[in-house]
Length: 523
Image (cartoon, rainbow, N blue to C red):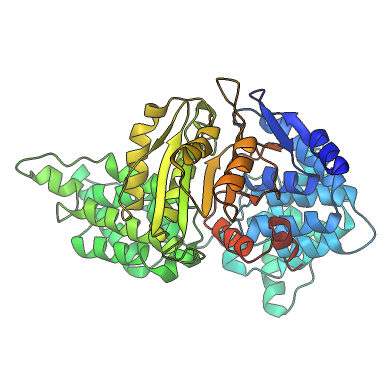
């Protein structure tokens, strides 16, 4: 016991708010830093600082774990840029076998990631110009050569951009891929001679239409309406393209029948699972539609044009988005009818940080979306938010996006501190037994009164009321510490934004831990 006590004290640190926290071990810290990193500044940590931290952590953990984490981040958490950072760093610190080559081939899932990885390698190794890439890691080169065999002429042509720092032709000459057949050799030859055709995509079709001359705006609007309807009929608009263009479709006055086709695609479970969208993408699309407010009273011809051939076009799309996000959570399991669940969302000041430089979605939005997804699946649930105070809020189990919006409008009601301990203190005060307590947060808890600790309150709650209860900390920012001791007293850490984190939750319920799940990735 003395040894265990000493270890606990050694691991105790202060978080960014000056409150007691607990260091994560290097592998867990690397996992949380990677799957919550959008390559932009966070509230407490600048982008360059996180890069330095990730590079240092790669040197501390087992190379095989780094490789599997890169695969996990790309194919399980749908991340694109950060896995390339891991591959670059792994190539820097690890030599002597084919681990880097195998991981590189496994991670690359799109043709443009070949050139993106080379650009990342240039940047992180502070090299300038293509000649500096001649000293490219041999295993990275081998993995990239194998990755070339994954793609056809269309996929290469779609991402063959002259504006890129590293071009596809540069990559071909650098890694010397071996074509798997004559047809692929013909594609490689076209890349080498700059004769690869640009495929005709929906973007190029709209761009070409925009270059045409029209007699007036009415003719132009009719041409674009017809083009959007043609694209919908052809199925050439991908799922993400639909999500990003819902407002455009309404403004272009596409027909009610075409709005119906869009709704069918959006709400299809097959299409949702195939699209692999972050849950907050649905929230972004939903909020864009909310900006188009339908006035009360008589509906004018102008309003009819804005909302499609039927004035309820926007409402139909909103309902489709609600159905889509429910489908994204269809695989969540582990919640029986009698399971008692508390979902607590951090809406403090540090959570009001955009998830990426160009996004209007905040971290607390992500927490709210994830919480509402779970709430939709739970039969016996309490939901609330915490800042200076903790407040339970009653919302409907349906309409996930509408519930998020309701929370969003009320976040100022609890203030902007991070008094997460109040969630557990309230359970003790009310003597309420929960099976699962889930906190969606950046983990920078503190007590503005200076007397309470969530760690101590949780231990007391387990001892006095709920010895079987589990606490799940959903880490949305990935700093180096946690407000509770992870893997002690049934406290678990899950990080990231994808709906796939619920798969991690299910595995935890079945006796695995997060690092074991990553280590099961096949390279």
